[in-house]
Length: 251
Length: 251
DNA sequence: ATCTGATGTTATAATGTTATAACAATGATT
DNA sequence: AATCATTGTTATAACATTATAACATCAGAT
Image (cartoon, rainbow over all chains, first blue to last red; front, side, top):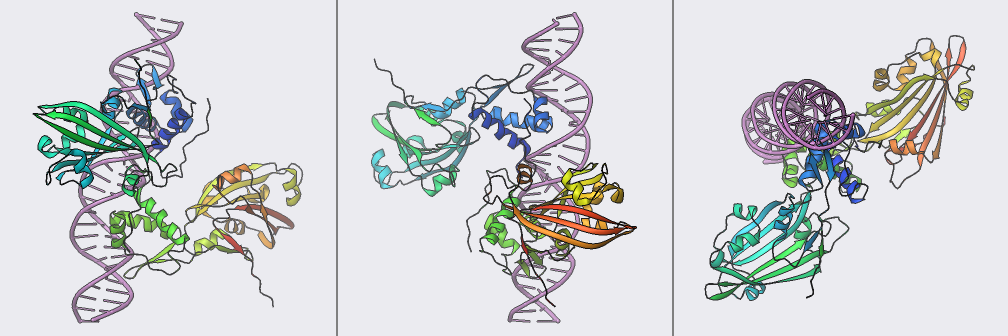
């Protein structure tokens, strides 16, 4: 496969990144499909006219973002695509991606106790003046921002949660680790929405063609000691990164 | 002028280059016009959220490519654009730009002695089997490819010319430095043309709106010892970078 | 004459990108 | 068992990008 070099040396974009994008393009256009063997590293060097360092950096990124797997002595192979998320599971998408070995990154944008707006107060069924822990978190996967979560949690239940814990764990894990808290029900509502400027910016959709996102609300009901409490999440999904699949088993 | 930062930190493009492009955009959209004072370096730092090094690197590029002038103690100003070239002068455009202090870069694509095609042989009035020196050169200015020159020169006059000499000198200088060669006449013919794939590619016009270029032929007649010889040049100009002006003084 | 604001210069440092090279370790083939 | 192809690792080096900081120099205004 003698390909013309796709590295544009006039561009200010690093060569390894151009190569990274070039290979993703091949995968997304089904020129390379699941299980296919990529050209060997040295072959890629020749095809693209770059050094092995550069090729390996591109492959490293592809591996971290779950596009390929590399096997010493054998070669580099296209990984199956993970691009649907099940809504039926309560377990989080972060856990789902982690189980698949795909690197996710986490950025905690907000983590503080506040008095919530009226809308949220109603959903959580709070006493007046009661504080919530408000967390805003941005998740990166597949090499870009995947979604934003806003969590509205009764502060008297969660207390402070360190930013480090938030960065390193899914909300499912954090919540189920709270002693004396038992999840009893969850409800998820998905709808398309037009994002506001902040969400647009965070998901890097400014200037993008797709201006409609997935807006997912999750309401967890739980027993805490003798009372019934509610946890509320809002999530905003990058539509270019993944689609949702609805599955249901009829008995 | 509190501007939102236009630096995209997710992009792999260097910040200084994003800033460079951002300012060019302002100039091309007449948000900044000839003679306008740019914000001071430290102001730009704040507006774009980058260090002075970064701002200065952007300004350096803008200066080299002729978009701005900087004056110590006063500030940075939008320069008038040199976007017309006189056709009346025999002297080259490279020299013209250099005199204005605008950086030009040079890439020699071909430099070899060959037997010319029939068309060229007729123009140069060559003996059958006589070789020419064929040079293809790409000139960059204003931060992009400006034009391509194809030079067809009788080999017995020029001999070999090193690629380094071609890179560092205008053809006018090279030719007039040949001993015993005296220019006696020049004729230039300008016409619009549709470029072939190679020219399109070299001038970075693939995908561009403007698909018509300037095609300029130059025929120099000269005395060389006792004989009359002809030098022939073809040039292909990027229409987005510069326009030609026709001027003539009537006596 | 002095101060202020602007660009010019220099030094230090951390990190990112790219190339070249040699060698190690593994899987598959002969 | 030996060899070959392939990915993994390490070292060295050059250059690019970005930040922080201090000081020099010049133009214009008070």
